[in-house]
Length: 146
Image (cartoon, rainbow, N blue to C red; front, side, top):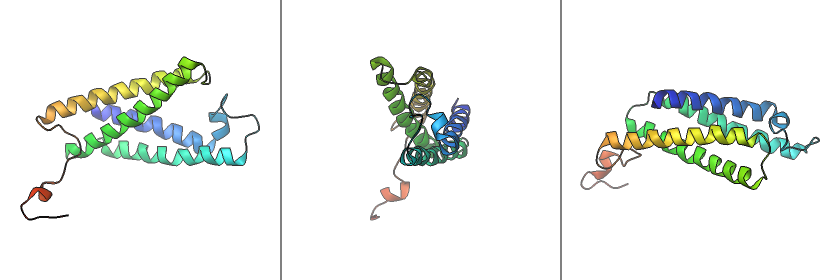
């Protein structure tokens, strides 16, 4: 489940990132004014770059070894998609979000749930102590300082 999830989320984030970089006003339909300022368009484009970076991180992590690296990426995606889904829930529930937010809510919530399931499964498979980011073995050695 983890590999396809990372691949699908990478593709999704790449599309959103490219859309923000190339077509920021069109991507922001019903949220961006008809005559947006250059500053607003620059801000939207600014958000596209990190999304492309996360897309690459997800894609490259799909086969990552050791599992702690992959599980750290899964946790980061859970936090990211969970935060965006929470924002979508508030916007849709209060009626302050654009019409398209309902569709984004479904997608973001699905990703958040999928990453939560992947995170729980990874921690269960790792046994005691979980499977997230961990301190390298060398730092536990006697007399070693960082």
